[in-house]
Image (tube, rainbow, N blue to C red):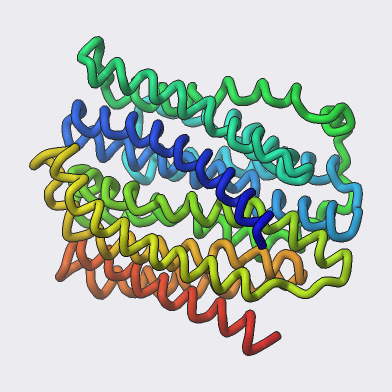
Length: 395
């Protein structure tokens, strides 16, 4: 437990520092861009990350679990499947941008470049997670965060300003230098020979978790899209700011999941039981952290952003608690990977999405953005409840 907490803290601190630099860039854009353009920026970037996650589709976690728990050599298959998944993202990206009325050719080209660099970045994440080189996992995000942080300082000092397209360029371009970490992989992982045999089985195994992951990673993009369709880009900016602040808990869950998956996969190979006590203690800690974040955030938004985003305040407490619940059920997903019960992830995520969409359909027309936030909260409670039912009642 102590060793796990140290690793979680190490990864968590790295993720939080990276997020702080990224948030500094977001702050600079929020203060300098018109509210409509800020809404366009947050919608486009959340959409890019969501679609790029299709290239993962649960394969990273499946690769780590199989490689460590069962000593399977599936690296070439793992990377070959990512090539196929990347091809799938191309038409999806085009249709999504058209649906949301993005018609600028420059945005399409930047989006395509973003898909490429994010695909490589996510692949490196899986390889480094398998060998438990957590310092490189942090660097995969630290390099983009540092670049965005430097640009943010220049903007806040008034040295230059960015429009929506330039801001998106910085967001996408900052990821590209992280690919240099490929050369820090062990030599056996640098070699890749395409192997498309047996991918149907691997895809079928990753599919339930992949759907779960896509829903989770697309959550902000889905919520922002609903806000845009129901209200407009200005409301996307207001909602997305509260959503971004609340996503600190997604970093907490990512840090925990990153560390515990290899640990529990090795434990499975050694016939050790899953550590439910560890899961319970971490869950309680996340809920306590959410209460502290609610208090802090009430003063943070007015101080940093002024009156421009005051409408985000009523949404913040709801979204912070929602993110805490999401973090809990997200990091517990490693149990289903280790126990090879990934179908449960499919059921949990689809159920959560349906609850969210139904709630939005009922609440958004009358409560607008507040209804959208409450729909997310109700969905989060439902997901955590179903997760623990499947973990403990149906063991």
